Amino acid sequence: MIEQICFDKVLLESAKEIFSTMVFMDLAEAAEKDFVVDRALLGSITFKGGVEGCMAICCDKNCAKAIAVNMLGMDSDSGLTEEGISDAIGEIVNMIMGGVKSRILKEVGNLEVSIPSVVSGHDLTNLDNKSIRTTIKVNIDDKFGAEISLIYRPCA
Image 1 (tube, rainbow, N blue to C red):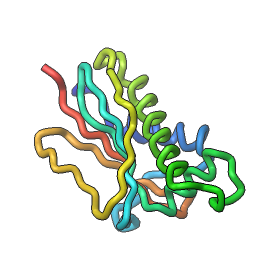
Image 2 (spheres, rainbow, N blue to C red):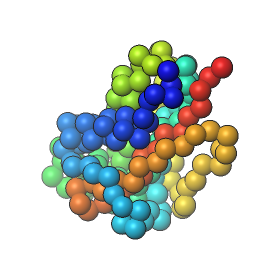
Image 3 (cartoon, rainbow, N blue to C red):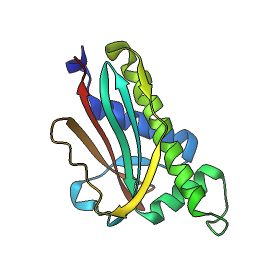
C-alpha cells in the first residue's frame, strides 16, 4: 500500500547510492539554515503508473559543474560545456529515479518514466498544490547545497 512508503527515506537512500557509486561524492541531509540556491539548474523526470509525479534535483551552477566533473572523471571543469553539465544533471535525475522506482516497485507496481529535462533560472518552484511533495535539502561533499524533491499523487 502506498501509505506505507516513506518517500523521504526512499529518495534519500537512492540519492546517496547514486552520488556514492556514480558521482563519487558524499551526500548528506542538510539543515534548512545551511541551504541557499539562487541561480539554479533543475533536472526533472516524470513518472506514471500506480503513482504519478515528478522527481527533481535543483542546485546552483557550481554544484552542477562539480557533479559533471566527478561523474565524467575529469580533472577540472575547463573542458566542460553547458551541454555536458546539462547532460550530467539529467543523467543524475534519471539514475536517482531508477533507484526510487526499484525501491517502491512492490508497493505501487510498474512505473513508466519519461526522459529527463534540465532547465535554468532563478528561484525555480513548482506551482502544483494538489500533489504531495517531499523535499530533502542535501549537502554534497560539504561544499554544495542542493534540493532533491519528489512530487507525487496516487492514481485511482
